[in-house]
Each structure stands twice: as structure tokens, then as C-alpha cells.
Image (tube, rainbow, N blue to C red; front, side, top):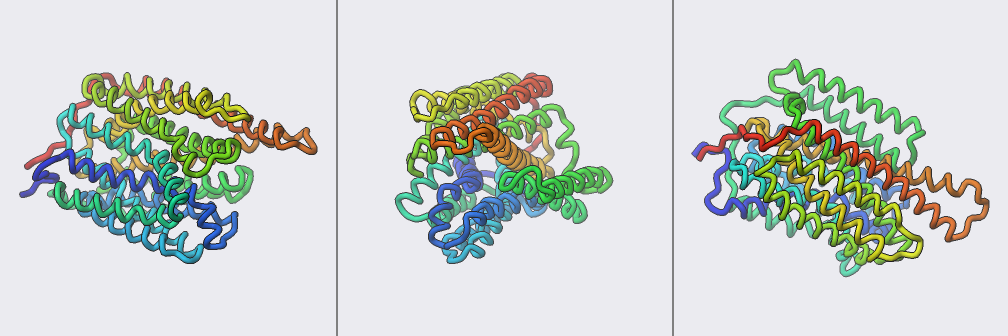
Length: 482
């Protein structure tokens, strides 16, 4: 049997296993956030080092995505998923058993590296599995909704596990996820390598991965320090130069790490813009809203996680009712710009957050509106970003989708945090001895500035994607043989 992907039975059970892989990678970007204070108390590392537990994961995940996508095409998607699962679970176990900061940060870095293989491999399997437009739309609704809600689920899960058990279970929980996903993949997914041989572009791998590393590191450095330091700009400039050089090399090699035609198609390019903008806003939202709920509203970690639950439910409702039914009929153009406008409206609602917290009046409406908007974006954008891609390039195309989201989240976290801090500082500059209330109002002023900027970017994204996305449903060029 020479098929790329064959299911003995139940393609939807296979999708459930692959979606669980995506959930594991997505939530691990935020599940550790709420556990950081407990981990710091247990392992006795400084507050300045806490950021490295997030940065280590982001650096290896972001810089190795293009390599992971191409290895997926080289090794076979099923093999890549299983290797990624085993490695990710093993790194999670090492992190859970860590008794020093160095051991924990090393485990997080290894997690990110295997996640860079696992995420594009899982998405590639979904993209080549469902050929019919209706089934494909439903599959990407499920996969996209899980990807979009991963950050919020991570906050909820991290809060529950940290409060009820231990911060170590924020890592150990991945062993359960990985075991269930591996069983489902072994039972329902079959995948081999393509018939023709592919070669790894070693030079492109080094240049592209280095460029992504410096870019992600620079953005992370800006978020933890400031945009004015030489290290920040030197790193970002190095990343941009290396990535520009990488693009040039991809035009001159026979088997490029990133075939540039994946980016030049209008609908695919528009979909990547939508994913970038959405990740930009989502990471900013979870950052500032979590700060607001914990530091101003004085919520516990578990309460903070539960507070994000309406966002997840609204995304699921919007994706299942609207995207699943409409994507196969009208394509992404009516859905994605509408979702971006709705998301902008939700972010605007958060600019009114009061010093005296009132969840039902000021937090809940924004979460619902934003969730309804995000639900219209992710599934159509992920689906159209991988539509029409040759089987031999499915892994590379999936890696670009993940890289776009990763960079969007990094830019959003760094830029919005910088804007918020600057606005807060500006509001306090003329007050010599500010009271607690004055500090609180200045902090909310900073958050509002960040939410306005994010909302403005969503509006710009809506206009750009409306222009770029094609009308109707693109025809898939992916062929699946049995």
C-alpha cells in the first residue's frame, strides 16, 4: 500500500488525536505562566530568571519550525508526529522532575525543539487527510478552534493544576496527553514518505533557523527589558538580515527549505496575515487580562483560568456554527475579515476596564465578542493557508503557519507590553508619591493603550485580508490515494 495517509476507520478519531497534539503544543506556551511563582519558590531562582522558562521554549520552537516542517516531509508525517510526541513527553517528564533552574530551563528548551517538529507534522496530516471541501472545513474548524483556544486553556489548566496539586503537574500532564494521542495515531493514521526523494537544504536550514532565533530572541529581549537596548535591536536586525538572505537562497536551490510559492499566492498570503494579526492580539489579551485579574481584581490562579472559559466557549460556538457550515460554501473571504472586525470590537471593550473590578459588566462582554471573532478567523485561515499545497510540501506549508503564529505572538507580547509600560510610566511621571489607586489607574491606562493598538491592527488586518483573499472556495490540489 503506497498511500500517503490511509485510515482503517474513523478519520475523525484520527483528527481527535492530531488535535490533541496541537493542543499540547499550544497550551504549553502559557500553561507554565501561572505556575512560575510556585516553581520559583520551590527551586529558588531569581525573578529575573523567570522569563527564561518562557523564552527557552519560544526560542527553540520558533527557530526550528522551518526545519521541523521539512523533516516532516522527509521522514513522513506519521513518523514525525510520533517522534515529536515521544520527545515532547520526555522533555515534559524531565521538567517535572527538575530540581534546579538549569534543569527546568533545559527541559523547556527541549520541549520547544520537539514541538517544532510535532506542530507542523500534525497540521500537515490534517491538511492532506480531508479532501472534500465540506469535510475539510469541519476538520479545520476543530483543529483551528483548538489551536486558537490553546493559550486560554493553558491558563485554566495551569491555574487548576498549580492550585490543587503542584506546578510540576503543568508538565507531567503532557505525558497523559501524549499517550492518548500516540494511541490514536498508531490506531487510525498511516503515513509514509512521498515517492520522490527530497534533500535537506543544509545552508538554508542554518540561515533560516538562525534568522528566526535572533528575531524571536530580540523580541523576547524587548519584552523583558526595553526596545532601547542595543542587544534588542542588534538581535532583531541580525534576524531580519539573515531571513532576507534566507529568502534569496531559497530561489537558487533545487529543494528549498521553504518553497517561496507557498507565500506568493494571494489567498495563502492573506491567510498568513490574518494568523499573524490574530496571534498578535491574542497573546496581548492573555497577558494583560491575566495581569488585571490577578493583580487588580485579586483573583487566584484558578479563578483567573476560569475567567477565560467564556472566551474558549465563544470561540468553539462561533467556529462550529459559522465556520463549519460556511467555509465550505463561501470560502474564507467573508469569514476572516468579519472575524477580525468582531475581534477589534472585543478588544475595544477591554479599554474600559475599571479599578473596581466588575467581571460581568466589563470583562465578560469583551471575552464573548472576541471569542466569536476569533472563531471566524483561525479555522478558515489555517485551511486556506494550506489549500492547494503539493503533498511533498505539506510539512513546509504547515511550518509556515506555525511560524507566522509564533512570530505574531512574540511581536504582540513585546510591542504591546512596551506600549503599556510606556503609557503607565507617562501617566505617573508628574506624580512624585503616587497612591495605590493612582498606580492602579496608571496601569489601566497602559493596558487601554495596548488594547487600542491591538484593535487598530485588527481593523487594518480586516481591510487587507478583504482585499487579498479570493472569493469562493479554493480547490484542493492535494491528492490522496488508497
